[in-house]
Image (cartoon, rainbow, N blue to C red; front, side, top):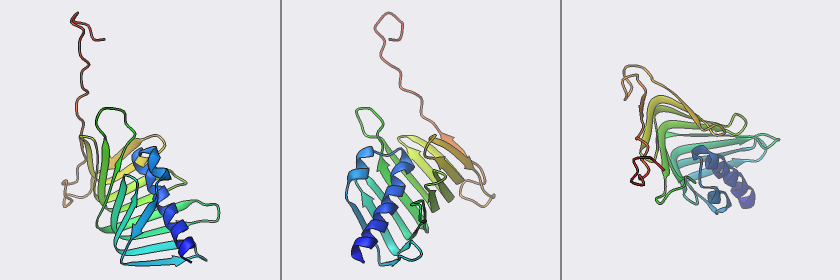
Length: 181
């Protein structure tokens, strides 16, 4: 049973890798899952982790109060992570001299391998490098890398609005001729 539990949990971590245009090397790293309680139902194809769930694979770290993974016979998976605050952090493959991290949080994160979507709901925010998206719901398409965000009611943290903060592109050094290289 332990091997089957590990396989199902490994699938859970595989779900999160594309969430952030992640570092590709993470997919080949060992997966560690810690929780206060775990339940695996092989007949239904579900795995539940309760209480301080921490999933680590390479640079990916996901923290939640509860995580459920459902897998259908074709191998398609749906993950739901919930809690007071669900967080994830992962290094991206973005080029450059310093690592770029993507950090997200919400009260709920749903990930669907069929639709290739990650949906962060309630008090959602995603930060990639210094760019930031804040809204009540953030939908991220892992194939197109397009974010859609919407605000919530006036009582939400962001007063029902969406906020996007984009940093200016760094200018390339000039060769002295006044023209950019």
